[in-house]
Image 1 (cartoon, chains in turn orange, yellow, purple, brown):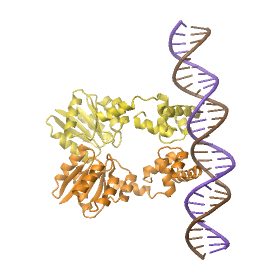
Image 2 (image 1 turned 180 degrees about the vertical axis):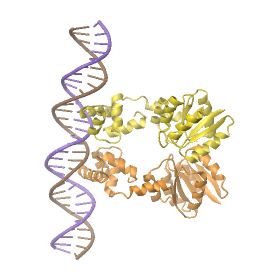
Image 3 (image 1 turned 180 degrees about the horizontal axis):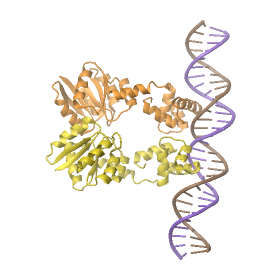
Image 4 (image 1 turned 135 degrees about the horizontal axis):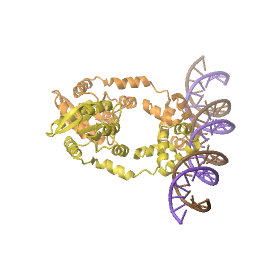
Length: 201
Length: 201
DNA sequence: GAGGCCGCATGACATCTGTCATGCGGGCCC
DNA sequence: GGGCCCGCATGACAGATGTCATGCGGCCTC
């Protein structure tokens, strides 16, 4: 019997998922949570085999919860179920040790099958998202460029970025210029947008 | 008997919703759709009483479908069910003639009740979202400022905005400057972000 | 130690952007 | 019509930004 923790802030969906998974003979939902913090508490209390986490939740998001779980409840395998995600989220999730990444377009039957796969040590990634991630490829940005571009992502002026990164404004401009060139963007704002879309931030 | 069209690209959720709503005696799901285009086709074919639309779908989104339905199937009342929406989406939805706007955090029982309310000519808006929308208040931006700010929203340089709006670059700068000042933003990029968050674009 | 590479910094310069003062024309009231 | 206000547009100017060439110092390899 696979013991499941279900975390999703949408009652409607969480309830439906619980009901549908309960139909499977070898799966038991032992805990439910409506936020990231609740999910962590539940996981510590019930120590489930698999945590099915929504990506977007109040408090820590699914990826953050997965990362935390790897530390505190290592025997629990994390997987993400999400509504509308891009290659970026997938990349971050895999880096956090998530073993499954599925959009909510799958059927309940498929989800159950994926839970079994993950429980047995396998991995599952939605093929469409995987294709996106592969198409986007590895980031052409180096560490500094990535750091500065993410600081620039909310539209802050260069002076503020320089202060926050403890660098000279000129240096910041250089790195941002290099990043924009690599991404084929005409300025740092579109560069930040592009990088975000591709999961490079 | 209230005849329902259910449109949501997430199989998992659409299936669950259909099952849960079928438990209600006075509600019948007569059609399902997985995209905006499909929703329109289904609505024309089945002419349901109420269309329950997901906000984010492939093709036309929920609001666009609602607007189109008002033209082509006027007897069909539209309502939006969404995962994570802000005041902006709510504002646009109401402008498109949507009669109900609910987050997916509601229970199935509540949803059924809201469908009945809407069917009888009432309206329903999630109170949390309504509070957000009221707190954001009316947009301080005039028509021109709004138009130019939305053109600026993707980080395009002023020259391109000017071309697309058929205005001189100087004029564009003035309007964007005015908009940024009104929003307390330090440049047009953060101004665009703020305006988007508040539903003013 | 010489040479070369790399990360960071600086300065010069062109261009872009934000701010301000001003100009033009239509609608409105008297 | 004359005077006025208001929305829209334009241009000038300063400061911010993007681009390029260059310099400095640490690190590696030979």
